Image (cartoon, rainbow, N blue to C red; front, side):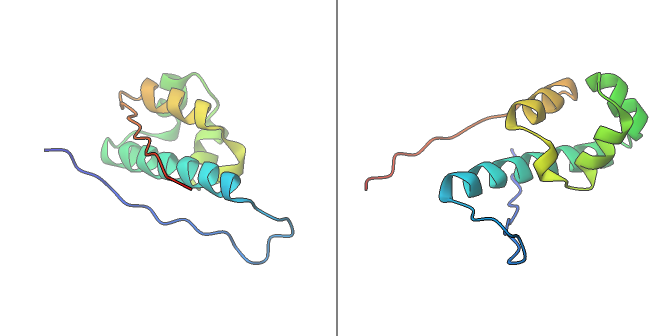
Length: 98
C-alpha cells in the first residue's frame, strides 16, 4: 500500500514581488519534493554528510534542503537528489478545460 503525504504551500504576503500561477505551481512542486526528501532522510536516520556523499553535493546544500529553502533548488535537482536516495518520483498530469 502506498502512503501519500499532503503538503500545504503558501506565499508569504511580505514578499515584494508578484507571483503568477505558474510560479506558484513550481514552488508548490519543489516544496512537496523537499518535504518528502527531508522526511525520508529523517526516517532513515541519515546524517547530512551521509546524504551529501550519496547525492554528490555539499552538506550545506543538504542543510538548506532540510530547512526548506525552496528558492535554492530546481525541480530537476530535487528529482536527482530523490533518485540518489532511492526514492522514485512519480507525476500525474491532469487536463483542465478553460
